[in-house]
Each structure stands twice: as C-alpha cells, then as structure tokens.
Length: 319
Image (cartoon, rainbow, N blue to C red; front, side, top):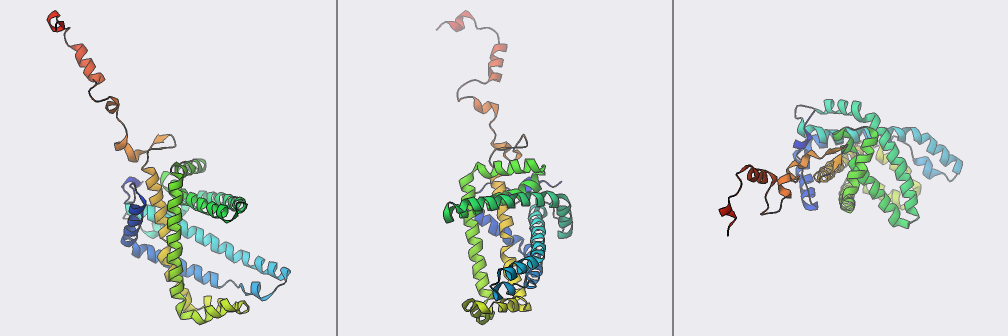
C-alpha cells in the first residue's frame, strides 16, 4: 500500500499557500490531468448533445412536457453515472499517482472502481438525499440559507473522497470521520470552499465566453428569441463546438479534486483521532513527557538519580 504521508500535497496550509500549491501541482501534472479530463469531457459533451431538449421549449402542454422529461431520464441517468465514474477515477488518480509513479491511469482506474465504486456510490446517494433536504430547508431562509446549504454539501463532498480512499474505513466510519474532520475548522473550511468555488466559476465563465465567440450569432439569436431554442441542439452537435467545449471543461475539471486533497491534508495536519488512532502525521508535534516539566524543575529521572546517591552529611546541612 502506498505511503500517502509522502504525498506532495500533504502539509499544513493557509489560504495563500493552498492556492499556490494547487497551482504548482496543477502545472506539474497538467498534461496527464488535462488529457484524462479532455477525453471524459469529449464523451460527455457528445452524449449531452444527443439528448433532444427542444420539446421542452416547443410546447406549453404539461402532458407533452412530462412526456419529454420521461424520455430524457434514461440519457441523463447515464450522464450522471458516467460523471460519477470519472470523478472517482480522477480523484483516485490525483491521490495515488504521485506516491506510486509506476502505476498508470488504467491500473489506477481499475483498482479505484473495484475498491470504491459501490461504497462511494452509496455514500453519494446518501449525500444527494441530504443535499436535497438541506437545500429545501435552506429555501425557508431565503437565498442565503439555500446557498449556505449548497456550500456545506460541497465541503462534505470535498472531504468524503479522500477520507474513503486514503483511510479505507467502512462506510459508517467514513461518514463519522468525514463529519469530524469537516467540522474541526468549520468556518475556515466553508470559507475555503467558497473561495475555490468562486474561482472555478469565474474561470469557467471566461473560458465558456471564449469558446462561444465563433458561435456568437447563433447563441445570441437563441437567447433573444427562445422560440429558436432548437438551434441549441444544432450548436451542441457541431464537432467544432464539442471539441472546444471539451477543451474548456478539461482546464477546470482537475481543480476541485486537487483542492479536495489540499483541504483534507490541511485538516489532517491538525492532531485529531481517526478510528481510535492518533494522527500519525503530527508525531513530531506531540508533547513529550519531559516537556510537561516546568523549566528549572527536576524530572523524575533526575530525582531518581538523587535518591540513589549517598545520604547528606551533617556538614552538608549546616549553612
């Protein structure tokens, strides 16, 4: 089993060092991460483009709209499953590859899917149900409550993958440890997830705007006249759009998995217990018995040495 304590992301951070480390790691592993993400995004963009959503815009009949939704359940379920598999593989690749240079994407993907597919799928379903409940409850607190619920779920997701893949506990311990580590520095973790989320959204928006430049006429025409929504399908099926969209998505896809590991290792750098065992990453920070003695006081070993010496004479006791 690889020694994850040697992972290049395994250290303590503040926000500045976290962002700079993410950037340095991203640059070092850019080629492999970009290639994996591009292949996935290419397939996903192609599948998404094959789903016909024009019926949702071409009719006001509720029965027809429901029928269109039902026809899209199968394709979108496939898209969700494919996205889940890719997320698992990419996260495990970022965790495993730096500490196991001899491995490759195929060996890492097969091992990750065999070991973590079922537990991660069940945990993701449970987290999804919790997310729906949390967002619904957050709506009662207006926009702020719903937004906080979304950020909170993203924070739990960020911790869930590393906790499962590195600590390899059963599902109940994984849930317990995820909640424990996520809530240890709660507001700091919430803040970091918010900052990272804003950065990813801004970068994605800029890249999305760039790739739409060649298709500006069709896109603006569709936005200004929703009746022409069918042109979205024509745009999504164009090979040039599929390739450009995949390139743009591949740039941002590795960022959150890298950030997830940074968040996890930063929390692990604080001394806390997992599955009843102390955090091994902070052995050097643990207080030793000798450190409990105040300066100038004698340790037990010193006292023992003094008791082993001969008894003081009368002259020694005389001022």
